[in-house]
Structure formats: structure tokens, C-alpha cells
Length: 411
Image (tube, one colour):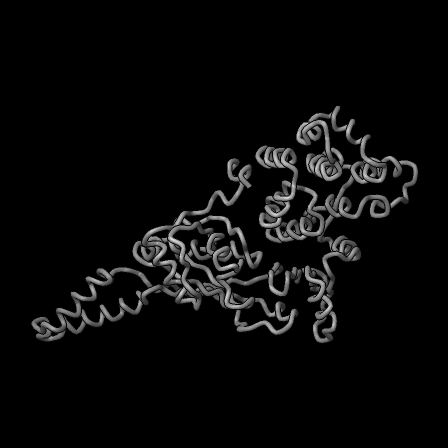
């Protein structure tokens, strides 16, 4: 991972937390029902999630109270616009955008001496079965301040009002209470500490609940796509909901996505695009073993590429050059179908979200495609960083160098 860190490709936009901020972070954890971290410094992302704390707790989603109840922590206004490195839902970053758009100025004020706990309430206390995810609709973002600062303000204002009544200004006990409140919390009179709840309406989305489910609800008929086979097998027994259900490995899923105008491809156009060039090189790299040249050089030098292409076995060669072979045969037989010639992963990888989709839906479908066929290393990095990091660890050293350069140069 050092290559990624050096190239600023590994969680490079995280914020370092230490000192007083750790104390506030722990108060948020306790307020949300979790245990404190023993770490004295760590990094956080846009929702306040920390990879170091997750490792310490051996729980990647330690900010969840069960799969149905997710939370966030705002410890500093610098979290505005930061990536969400390990989202539980595909819309988590959008939730944080809404928070900072509406309450950005108040957050700047509050985080001077406090922190904010966020509750993403979708009116579901517990998930009982996979199709409960269809209940996701309106999410209410609720805010809670550590030390109950908003309640302290109410108490402080009440003391001041009492102090101003009649001759109470000479009452030393009231004076002492006001001084004690001011010493503990500061002057709260002019501070806005009541953050109005925010409503967010979901449409199509992805959730990591039940092992991962894509919920596509804005098309001809709702489609559920399951990453976990056991969950899928449980879900298909449902006879109540009128939805289509697929496991992510099902070949008929791709046909359905095409027929619903969710994905598309123009293979004659794709063959001249950088994306296909990346995919082809990445596929070749998976077949290169004990090479006399660095893999990076083989992938970047056309002469070496051809040389090593001819060194791998015939079936592997057909997978690498599948698109060229198909288009050649297509000229002879117009009825030839790409899915009958191309390797399945290559066929899927050459698709893209349909141009008619909204931007947020296009992002969701890219995420789906790179999970079905993670063959475009650049798009895998863009749309599923956690999977990318796991894949990167498995690559040969020189291949890692090529991947880093590819991402940095957007090739």
C-alpha cells in the first residue's frame, strides 16, 4: 500500500484527529451507544469514520447500531466535502452534502468547542428479512450535541430571565449559577445550537445490509440485485412484493439491465477508447508469470505487449483480444452476438450506464458494473475504493506500478 500512499491514492483526504478532538469523538461514541476508542490519534473521513478505530474495534461499521441504524460524527467543519471511504449506503455522501449545505455556518460555530452526533433515521429499528430494504424511502437526519449543549443553553437563558425579574439581580445564588454555567459552557446566549432536522428522499441505491443489495426502483419494475447468495436464496421465497430479484452473478441480469435501458455499449466505439485499452492490458497482466521484462514495461510497450501476448496460451489470448476477434467475425456473420463470443467479464466490463440515466443513477450503475466485472482498474478505484485496495494488495509489484501510473494519469 506504500505505493498508493506515496501517490496520494490511499485515503489521502482524511483528517488527523488528536488531543481534545479525540475526547469529543469519544463522547460522541458513548452518546451513540458505542464504546470509546483507546487511540490517542487517528484519521476520519466525511462521516467521521476512522479506519484505525475500525481496525481497533475489529468492526468495519462500528458507527452502526445494527444494519438498520447508521450514524455519523462531525468533529470539525473540515469534514465538509470529504470522501466517505467506507459507505454503508451509496447515498451517504449525499446525506453529508445536505447537512453541510443547510447547517454549514452553525457547524462551524458548534465545533469550536463541541461535536455533533448524527442519526440517519429511516423509521426502521431492526431489519428482519432482506426485502425490508424496500422500506427505505424518507430518511430524517437528526442532530445531537455532546454535553447536551443545547439543553445547557436553555438552562442558561432561563437563569438569565430569572436574574432579570424584579430584584433577583441581588440574589447571590442565581449569580453563582449563571457564573458556573458560563465557566463550564461559555456564553451561549447568541449561539445557534438547535439544528433543524433534514429530510432526504432516496430513490435507487446500494446498501451493505444483508451482504450487499442494489435496489433499483426507478425503472419499469423494481429490481433487487444481491451480492450474497444465501440472502438471495432467502429473498426469492418472498411472495408479497412485486419485484425482480437476481444474484449479481446471474447472466440474465445483464440482459435485463440492457432491456430496461439501464446499461448500454457500442463495441465499435469502445475498441478505440482508452477504457478498453486499460481493460485489455489488465486482463493480460493476470496471465503474465515469471516474465523477463517488468509487467509495467510489457503493458506500456506495444512491441513487448505483442511479444508476451503470443507467449500465453491460445484460450487466454482469445480472452485478451476478444473484442478484436468478435468485430472481425461480425463482418462475416452479422447475426453474431457479442455475449456468445466475448469472455463474460469482458462483455460486462465494456458496458456503461445508459446515457439517459440521472448522474446519481449513473454512479450507482458504475458501482454495480465494477462489482460484477472489476476489469477496469481506474473505474474500480473511482467507484469502489475498498474493493480496489483489496485487489491492489494481490498484484505483482511491477503491475502495481502500472496501476498507480494509470490512475494518476487517468489513462
